[in-house]
Length: 142
Image (cartoon, rainbow, N blue to C red; front, side):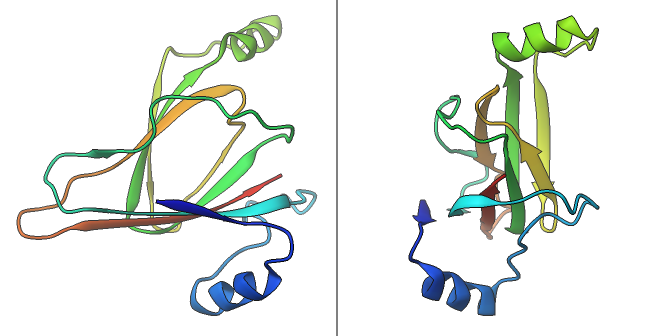
């Protein structure tokens, strides 16, 4: 499940921030990064032993440069594939891209991605016998 906190949701964001550490920008030494737009919150729980898929592979129809995703609890596996537009841009500067990438974000990891230029889908890994896996992440556009 996911939800968005839009403009005017400052009180809800502050209350959430009291419970979860919500960075303004990812701590990657990039102090010039400015965030904008909504706060995205993603939650999921997988009680099964096999991976629980999220949305089908897609790109996002957005106007910003990218989104950072902070994995605040559990893990989420990202499946990434470059769009043709991204391939063309990289080919023009002699940067080779693989066909696909798989990234597992663990608690505390930050993934910065332009979801307009990368096909993407996610999964919550399966649980160990008798348990469940909870995944929570927070995202902001930049």
